[in-house]
Length: 465
Image (cartoon, rainbow, N blue to C red; front, side, top):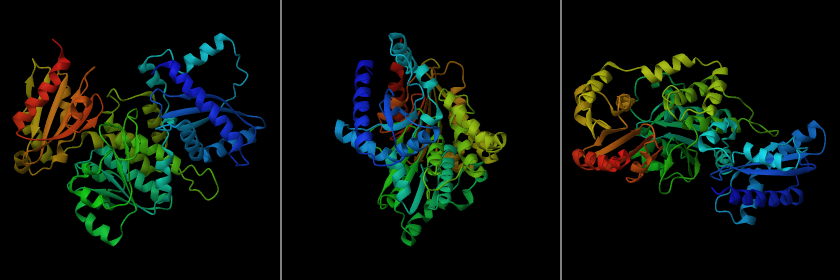
């Protein structure tokens, strides 16, 4: 984004907030507050608000709590006054550097510290875990709900399932009634995730809805109801639906929180849980991550980063991992269960899938396939293919991997992977899918050979030559 346009937006937000805080905020805790600086991030989703307070340390702490409590009101007023289509989340930061000089050197230093002269890699590296701030509207929806269904996508990986289980446990701790929905035939290792024994199977969802209809559904690691497959017919009856996802998406996703910077959906859920348990005011829930929540979140984090090997592993990823490890979870055992465990039938399926490996474009693209016949022969389920595509990306010279998984006759779930500077998200979006540049997915109907040929044609332009 043009840095001069960004500076003008920062200035406009500063001017409006300074007036609104002074005139409209009635919270007595917000004392002599001065808004010193506003820093919008590059995609304008978060605005850091640096403020100072005239008074003692207790006055500063009280003012910070008051501003956080008024955040929803301030965001609403900001959007109304500036006619913003999307209002950034406000993150209040106590500024103890009011005495900074106003000379050119100091101004340049501030610009440099804000990332104006840094590249995208440096800015991503500078982001902290706490800079991932759950949207106010999402937190309000959770606070106001009485019965919540938390739902991962069909054929969930440990990130989707772990996120759902952790959020359900946190909502119950916060005094809500919450249920995790799951699907039959989960892959090996899932039974070790805390809470799996209590999930509501998708096959029983319609009956459960009749007995006690939820007022909110939260999709985790998933931005659309139809990614819950047949379960979507039940979910569509629920009055409100939100999502928590870290995949780039096309079209019209559910309202909620989509943050591609996060290494996994479980990290976003972790921040939501921290906000749920913050207890800033009397009567609000006050709790920390417990061992079960932390174990589920870590399962999602370690798998979606490939054991911290994938490029989505950032400094904030390790910051979150450290917090999780400090709860006392057995990180080695969790990684072993969700990354490396296979059933014997699953290994038989792997043998058949590896026999389908085919190389294209002089070895730059590899394709593999799992069909219904293979599943029937081995007595396995599509969930047993989790992680197979990573074997393809490990081959020397491969830049793209295409894994075709037969959902029903003629309907294929496509997992795409890229190495280096490749981009599979744009290809997935052509079919209504989404994801990240290096990992994306979509669903395509048609003859498998014709579908593969289309995907190869879509990928070849990125190979050059």
